[in-house]
Image (cartoon, rainbow, N blue to C red; front, side, top):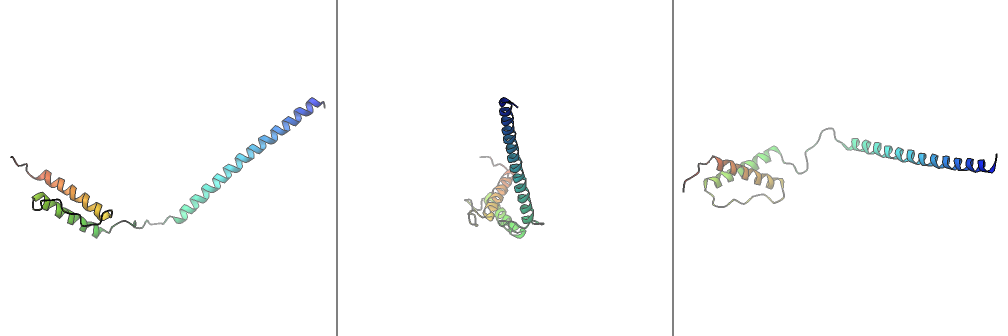
Length: 121
């Protein structure tokens, strides 16, 4: 074997070792990603309840019915002209009751105003 062939064999061996190291690194990174993904899904399944519970900010059906009824009554009074200004929302701002009351009030008021006859000036 001549020195030229020995150098070529040495370069080929170094290239093969570098390629093998690169492929080993790719395989180990892919295995790590798969392991993390499996662990994530396993932990997610462990924390997922079989039946979803009520949300922390949710209201009971009775509470929803009460808030809607109060808002609809206030809208009827405003539509009939018994109350001159928009009534004050009785619930604390930012609560689910506040949002439901406002939405129900304005929706009911809009529906009632559509049903009222238009008066001629």
